[in-house]
Length: 214
Image 1: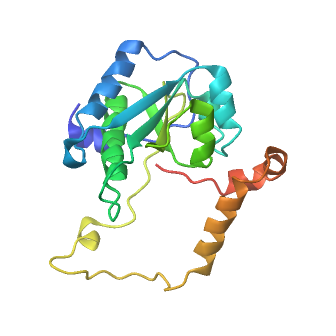
Image 2 (image 1 turned 120 degrees about the vertical axis):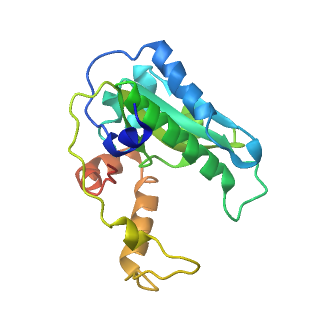
């Protein structure tokens, strides 16, 4: 598959067939991640493959991403956080580059995926999956054979609108103090720290405000 074709045609899949992903394809997906660039060539990715229904259910109870338990496979991407470059958090960049490789290869193999960051606080994932403190959960990939493929969404800007040369010359309307954004951040922080019964009562509202990536 042409790389540009893969980039433009990849979709975020939230509806999956009840069909197992062969281990051979899983290993190709992980191998693609291994060939991503990484800061200082540390290559300190780790991948927890979750196919146990009980473990998936534990994670599903902690997130408003409704489709998580319906995916055939969940892959939690971790990266070692022992970096000296905290200004740019290069461990997160290294993980993100691996995730992009994974999603493109998943698409090229005839599978679908969705990158999920609407996750519980990291300490809860650490407890469920026995993750040590020196590794950060970065994102969760839902993987499987697509049951439904959404239509492509148009890009919000043309290429010329997102390029400037030698200095920042873009129009933007973000306020210096965005109270709406602050409220959203505080709400999300509190939501995931409420006891499960309270979150269950707020689930409908949580689904409404769930982040979506296409």
